View (spheres, helix red, strand yellow):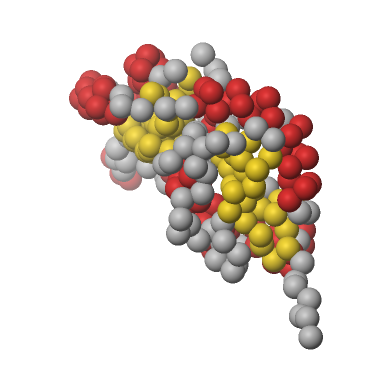
Length: 261
């Protein structure tokens, strides 16, 4: 008696050139039973996995992505596959939850953008993405209000204090923005492409710092020492801000072919 197999969807992680070794062994993907595999698609190879339709259909996927813990696990699995693939061949990362109803539909969709994928693969070959974040640090907590003799609050002193605090915040913000532009100019000089991303809000950064620069840079592999040295020098000079570096990453920010000068 033949047991009917549960329906599956084709999950696409990344796209490489047809002749590149796109699927390193031992990459688990979503651990759904089916292995991560290569799917030839014209002059491209897609890195895919068959995933249960019941777990990745529209409603199930909506629930998965709305649950923070499940979303984090899903994003981690997606990222691990792309990282492994990018370590052995140039690869264009696809967005989380790129799904098709079977291999043929996936081939059709990739074929429609084949030239764009090939152009992007040419641009990112031998290059990696680095992320740079710059934060303005909060000022010192305000001192307690002075009081006039007899305990009455001094209205003029209070207004002066508020005005000084406001001016101080504006000056720190202006200094931080200028510092961020200097950081960007230095790193941009090392990069072949850059992209400004939306800064994070206080819910991510916390109340004691403000995100003033969130940028991704595409650098030739092998320029890491120059980048580290440049940022070390910037941290000594730009004491009004906090500078963070992350990477190297697969070129997520440049996967759509957009290459800002």
